[in-house]
Length: 523
Image 1 (cartoon, rainbow, N blue to C red):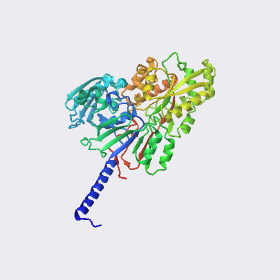
Image 2: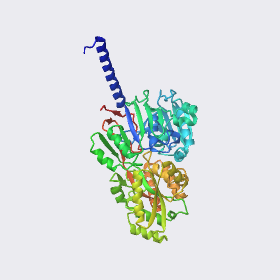
Image 3: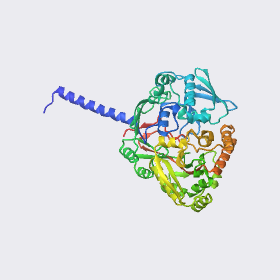
Image 4: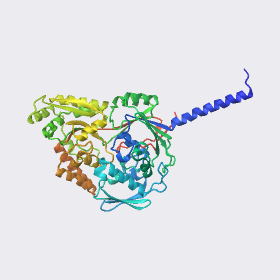
């Protein structure tokens, strides 16, 4: 068949356009990062954030903070919206100079009034931040791009707190326009803009091409909500997902995945030590509970086979925790290794008998989060308790319901954990053990204890570094004597990613990823 010149030209043009379309689609795929998460974010509102992992990470990609941890070591703070800052000799006044010519995603200008508005809003709305932002006495605007934050007491960790998701700077104009709907359409200055959200399905962020650090290399981030761990694994293997966040192994147990992925050249496994703590918590503020008796708490702590849990159930993906701080914390008390309970079922049974509990006379509901990780840990603890004559019924509960139950104190024992959002012992100690905060979050519900409370607050506010270290070491010894929990393990932060994803640097405190520096090589 002979083609006319017109037909031949049309055919070549069609082939060229089809090729361009395929290239355009390939380019879009190369510039879209697909992140698999296990659940919908609880919220995208900095002022209401309570350290929920999925929402917190998204917030840090939509919003900027005054300061942030410097990659790749994350041991020092760098300026983000602030170009410089100074701290008064008494540690009470923090003065910031802001970056000029920064705009929010809605086109309004960032200035000192916006920073003041945002931080005061978090202080007002977020009870979770009461222990820290509650110390803000006054925020004074000194000029269009300068402000001073004055504290009622010295707080050495305050600068670190300003790097948290709760300290994200919001657009005042958008808040006033949207009111309670701001969390459904958040507006910040960050490297990515909020585009859309489909409940229990996905969250879409688009690149902020006007970002003051330079436009992201990615064009889009697509967070896909995939609750089932096996489905996430298949999607990652097939290339439908670029990154699987383990979120400190909050729900899934990735031991088998690690083995499989290490043998797959298309996938990389990132493991980073953390300051995450997982523990079996006691309700320390209920006189009617059997665990109000310290002998029962000690018995339970001695009943747990810590080595078996870490090396067996967790497959070596975690390390032993001896008390309220991990051993890699700069304030860790080395004596805690000797003070921590060891696995001793005979000692546990003797303590129960001393407390007047015959074998089989005690029974508890053992509450835990949902997911294979918590299910495996809970079943292991259940067997340990059965060996000393305690019956435990495992109750795996969705996070919102478990949080409500925990904060209200309607439990005796519960598996829980804490992921520090900043690199300081205060991240574990104050919110967890200060008795005045017992009803504000998933804490250890400590009973009123004037001596311990005073020690915690002194450690929080002491400016001298070595004095703070000594005070936190004393806090650890005091808590060991009270046995507020059976401390179990510290997860490594584990991230699975496709090998063509480049530039990802994983932070350990907070265990959240920023994607401004990430790009994808074409496959």
